Image (tube, rainbow, N blue to C red):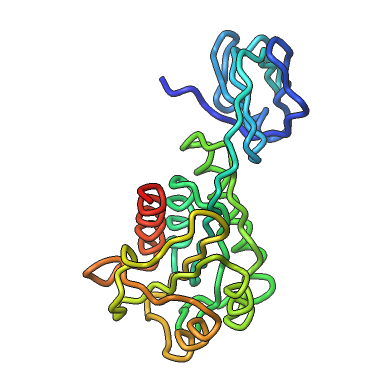
Length: 244
């Protein structure tokens, strides 16, 4: 049986010391999952530190874990950022889940010109809540010690300014002639990739991004859905940088 992972703040955890899991995660562990004394669980702070150990006590709404191991996920030299055009339906949560499982560091919602979904101020707040919840749950399911940041939505103009600050920004486009594998990839710094909406990028968006320094690249010989294109790009980038 897979040992479950829960998310909670950790303050200088030490082997042999107890850690109390309370709040919503404690309620889920004690009252929903009905974790019993002796079961081994993981608790992560979502920022790269985790503890593992057996449950030594349970109460309504909380469990206590005796720390057997303290683990740390090291900082990577390359920080990956996915710019995700707003998709319709549940494809947004699917994209966030899969990107999180693969180890994305940050996800930026983007209101592209051809996005069917439009986020008003109120809708943006609800959308961000859903995206962040999906990232947290995916991190727990995949046992990742880092929960990716889901940033505030950016406009095309704001993204262009962000591109100038990255080591590399890849603009994913089905008509590109340059395969991603042929780009010179940095081995440190921020690598960002931009995923367009179902209707595709406009010529104006591509021109804006390339003028800011973005590189247009191809990741498949077919047109991918907006919810899967980012996952394919991230997997390729990680493999190519690791190979280099």
